[in-house]
Length: 135
Image 1 (tube, rainbow, N blue to C red):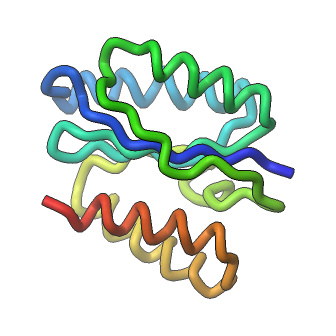
Image 2: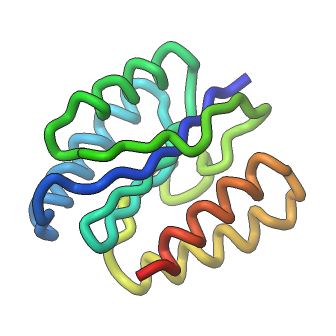
């Protein structure tokens, strides 16, 4: 079984594209090393992240995020186990959405996923869609 945690948080400061790219590169390298898949979205000074992987590693990663000064008001919205990863096939397993093309690609992927009719996947999809559609 795969552990999945999805959280939202406020950014403690404005994140420039350069800062986000640095964050993304560090996160991607760390996640590849620990076999974590998922997605990270930054919008209007808020983060939404889905983490998927081995339970202990996901909990340790989430704990580090909770203690990261770049985040405040962290809310864990999904904390469950799934049979297979939702984002494993999306953009090499982990991505940051930072432009309209990225959003279009994500919507296309979410539509493709929806066809699997997996309740947990659909819950994550709805969460991601609500986040990126909100102001």
